[in-house]
Each structure stands twice: as structure tokens, then as C-alpha cells.
Length: 261
Image 1 (cartoon, rainbow, N blue to C red):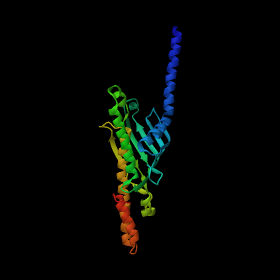
Image 2: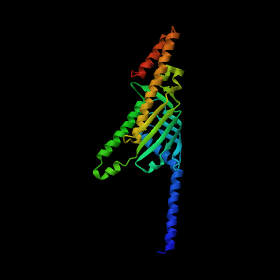
Image 3: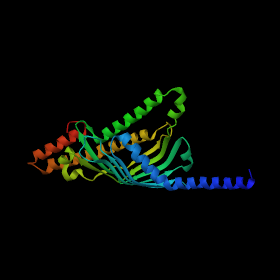
Image 4: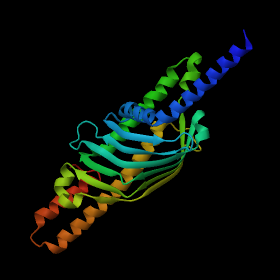
């Protein structure tokens, strides 16, 4: 073959590769959005939406906007989590490895809707659904024969050095909202800072998500419990004839800690 055509062919190949890389960079956000909306519902068994993702492959930083995690079936409120903005920084060198290293995720001002149902709640239901998905993954890996072990172990692992949840608010729903009224809206969620998720132990994205949900549930229970106690004390001190109202709040407190709603 003429060397001239070899050089031309090689040049076209290089240009094509560069074009694919640019396309990947430009479409990384839409790929993340697609992944979130396809994989998310399989984990939570609820609606998951993401308005947009703007991630730079070159800098390894970016933002996700408009994340929504719906409630599982059987709960009256449509959503469990709404987040306006998530900022993240990724070790770009890890994107081509089996372990994606996320240096920092900052979840800003999440709006949490907390709803009790008997002795469980919407967050416990979400966690149970995610854990089922994790168990299913593990079962599938074990059932694969030795010839497909490589495929079974090929799922990306994730390491999150710092995960910060700031300025969150909790809104009560269902029976709890009826009990606490206006006091059940806009309750402050304590800031959460988790470190070194998946650093010492292989962790899938689903396992990391379950861990975060667990921590959020602890914060929610603490925040709502404090509001309930304050409201109960206020009613006891200020309402001599408010026995019924005090009883309602007392029932609400019991429901928070495992009693029937």
C-alpha cells in the first residue's frame, strides 16, 4: 500500500478517535442522567429522576441538578428525597479503572419527606429495596460458572473520600403531619459528613447508596424526635385544657420510636 495512503488513513483514524473522546466529554452529563434514571429505579423500586448533569472529564468536577427519589409503594407522599444541587469532584485518572474514586460529594439543601407506616417508614422501605438489589447482585455472581467470573466481578466499585450533606430540611407526611401540623414542616436535618466510603472494602454504588440512606435516617429520627419532645413540653406547660392535643403528640412520639402510628 502506498505510504501516502497509510499516512492519510492513520490521520483519519486519529481524528476519529479524538472526535469520539470529545463526544464522550460532551455527552458525559447525559450518560450520567441516563444511568441514574435507568439504574436508580431498579435499586429503590421507586421513581428516580435527574434534571441534568454537567461533568467535565478534563477537570473531574461537575454538578448534578434536580435529583428526585420517589417514595416506595404504599406511601402517600410522592417523593422521599429532592435535591436541587449536588457538587462532586472525581479523580479523573480512576474513571478508566475498576474503582472510581470520588474525592468529594456535597449534597446541598436536600428536602426530605419522612413518613411512618406502622412500625416502618419510607426510608427503611427504600433501604430494604436497595439491600434486596444488592443481595440479588451477589446471588447472580455466585451462580455464574467459572468461565464468566471475570464478567461477574467486572462491576465498577466506588470510593468516596468525603460525602457531605448540608442544610437539609425534613417535612413530615401522613399521620405524623396530622399530629405535628406546621411544626412538622421544614425541620432542620443535622449536617452529615461521611469519610472513606469504600476505601478499605470493595463497595458497589448500591452499597454506598444504602449506607447514605442509613445515615440520613438516623439524622431524620433525631431531628423529628427533638421537635416532638419540644412540642410536647410546650403543650404540657402552656395548655391546661389541651389534654387531647398532648395525647396526640405523645402518640406521634411513640410512633417515631417503633410504636403504631
